[in-house]
Image (tube, rainbow, N blue to C red; front, side, top):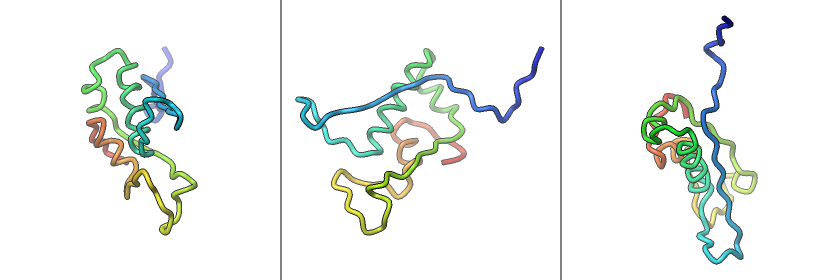
Length: 98
């Protein structure tokens, strides 16, 4: 039997969120809310209790959006000082790393 390296990332669920400005249900979500919606879908996709999976999340990471990457940029839909922490808070996760 082959052993899996303990540093190997494991994908247990996937999710995606999108909206178009001309959709009738357009909500104008912030980047954090989009990421949280996709993460909620990924938690549900695992087939396990989403709260249990969220509590087992070790790391939440994200990349900065180009259009809000400078201190003087304007974010009409809101911005976070710590994007991964904001997403983790919205999905009920308390990761060690964010």
